[in-house]
Image (cartoon, rainbow, N blue to C red):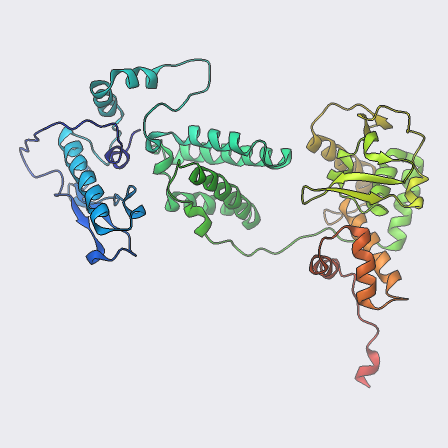
Length: 436
């Protein structure tokens, strides 16, 4: 569908003198310009009403802004809005209807005005569609999202890109089912996105709703930066407060029982957990590690951290001595594979991470009866808590945190302190005497 509001601002329309003969009531009111009494700080636009096909009454329709509000003088705004007004009148006279699908009328007009553009627009090839010389306002939302994804491809991490792609696919599916009249990117407005986000929240969770909002906002910002849309209105949509969730820490007894169990049942999984426990790495970071990331002479490893930077971390002796002799293996081999340390494993990073998560559930959580509050990440909480409480026995809290910050890899003290609060690592001394 090519919406009348988009066609008004196209630069490719030729001017024709057309007449519209009305037999009965007028189908539309005379378009007018709203100039906010000359106030350039407010938005100017063209407005009109059209007779609704169901009620038969004139109904005020969407305001036409175009690019008018980019200009900073009255003369410039009047000039452009008068042009929009003139084009709107001619489109209405030709039969374009804001409540209808105008695609056939548009094709007829486009063919008459520029046969070459029409041919390029309708040509179907095996390649992906490309944008012709037509204004960005008639780019379909599918084409716009595809372009945004291409621009994001080399910027965001593989996992993030997959998340973008999946959430955009869900949004497009929802549009095709619930907003059949929407075809172009400029037809998607704030009201439509809010309705979609509400639907996500009702059917899943507020957290998932916020994540979808963040992805759509990032995509629309890319489209704005590349002059495909005029505004990233999604950034103004509120973020709903959610209750944070985290994995619980294991008790000393639980941790020892798990290690003893895996020593007998799965030593590869046990070493994976020890990289979390002693190296304070995240599961996804461990799954990235290759043999070449380890410096066996200096006992260090290079890891791509959560903030996307490469960091060099010390491998403590308690962990280093657990490694088998893998120094002569191909440096491109992964450190962890399903059944051995060091080898090739040609699957995506996220699938490798999911493999160890599922394996942990089968080998440990199901065996010991742990619920969803526990997981691989629980070991990071457990051992950071253990280490911090050991440090504060001989240091002040600030000294202990400074030492701990070097070990855990937190970039700022505020980040570390927030993390320690979240995992309840900081507990007060017994305060019973205060009640005497």
